[in-house]
Length: 215
Image (cartoon, rainbow, N blue to C red; front, side, top):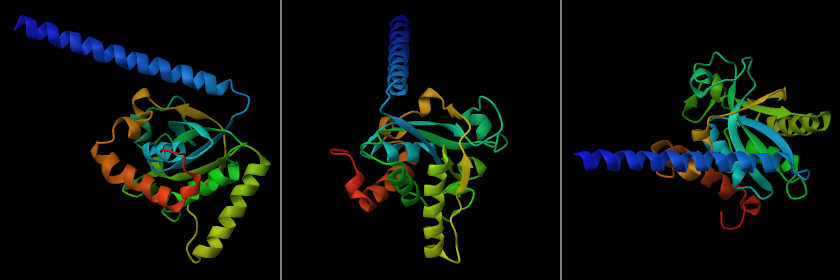
């Protein structure tokens, strides 16, 4: 029995050590991205951030996609708090991209082309204000691009219309470590298999020219 307990403790220490190493690597990667003058950032909310993160990370020119929270009124939101719908935040992603490879306009096309644009207060099976669609702008030029695309989509969809909110970007709160790269790290998880991967595959089939090689 004593040997079994020791083996279990060693296994737990190994898992903790690997997790800490992974978190440290993520932080170093994020620091490098933030210091890269060639990269720009964009912010989108479109249902579960596991799905949206995976979609954007498949796009040429996107260096990293971070899962987190935006669009609300509380500080330091957590997953548990945002899921109550009382924080005002939506699950969102922070995109680091190279504008020499992919434009903001194309990222907006990815946004609208990878969701049900008329679904209000959710995406797919995920219902609630924390899953609502929000597209954030950081300049008058970005707002103009977004509004032009929504106008064109509304003309196609009439009498239905685009449900996404358009809001000025204020603050992005990075999500918990265990949410980062969730689809890639947990390909056999039930939600990932039934919702995230099919959504990603539909996007890839729709925009094959935007997908990274070997992705």
